[in-house]
Image 1: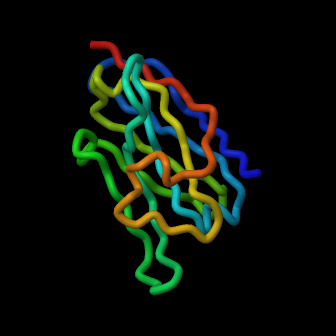
Image 2: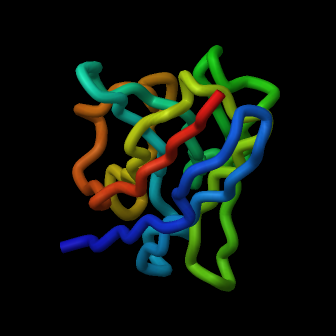
Length: 133
């Protein structure tokens, strides 16, 4: 079983920033396809940002973003801390949601399907982000 633990959520005003963290096992951070999703009340879960590592071709890391967050959010990892991050800047009220960290598992590659929740096998419990206008 893979345990993912999110933290860093909170309440901010429009235009503010937050950094979400996802603590994961080291072998997941170093080899697994990972992503951040969010779910607002009454809406489905949507992919926000994806982090892919192509181990077979050694093409390095690929990051992907939903159009609604491009230029404002940044996904990154820290191998030493075994954490995945989501830096969120210029937050808007429509960013209000529960944010989840997800992984497909060790040695996984999600390719262009990173935004599809059915691709992922393990999920964290979520951290709430609330943005007021």
